[in-house]
Image (cartoon, rainbow, N blue to C red; front, top):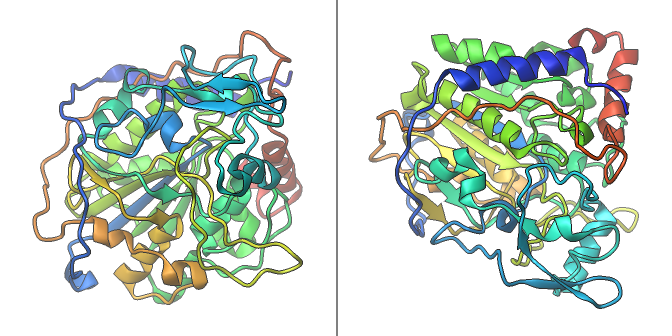
Length: 433
């Protein structure tokens, strides 16, 4: 088993220290809200000046938020057959990492096994064991327990493609993907970063351990900053107009990451998201900002809602990107977000790009973001609530190794190790590691 890196240990220790420093009580729970499609204001006079995106890893809506009153969520009482036809029940997970279980399959092929031509009954088949049918309740997620009452939650937010991490993260940057696997080739796809730079809109990408944006080429180097820089900028009110934050990825199998990907401790993810939210709501920029929290894909965990087929580039080489993936937990925290609201309209990751394009007058990148529902429709620009929401800071338990090393998921996820090694060999990117 490979050891946690010094950087991971330092980040984990620092996060735990901050998390232990304060904790605020929160009140309120989400109520049903079907948001009508209202006329949007002139974007320049909307009051929205700073958009922040945080993209976590590998959880489905039912698995994480199926308990939310008023949302279309289901947890207990579902049954899925394994490859031999034996039924397995959904169940409450009582430990935070899933140690000893397999990492649920979230590959392009595995997703189609789970979808099963629309039957939605394949979540216990293939390499998936009972972990894929497990769920957490609000008591297990101390930050989301309170966050739902202070944000708008989306119960029809689908990951952009029925496939793994890299293709879905590509949609958050480029509104399309040029791959269906977690491959390391540098992409030539145009991105929202190119549009923002050309328009003179300030924008930065912030990484915790691996600068994923490097997969789009060396010209992105001027945009890249360590995540600690974002926290410092938020504190003094000097954020760019557009920010995108990534958690740290290495050490997932050891419980070392804070990205929510198994076998990460879910409290590490809760702690990191709480730090980001706390930094923004207490920033001098809070009254004109929006924090969008989402997950790259469903992680192989069960969900009961059939994902849609969405506009995309024409199929190439027999590969069709139009099939969206399963639902993922998604929130907007902002003075313009209806607190305790649940938006039932359909969104995918490119709805974020649609919002960015609307706000700063940018052209769409691809058929997907051109057709996507603008996230701005979830906002109330007429009656912003500028008071600082009451949210807890969750204590980070720090990186810790699964009690059953060698069982289930490997110590390191190969895709992140390969990406790290790719950047180490690159003279342009190696200094960011």
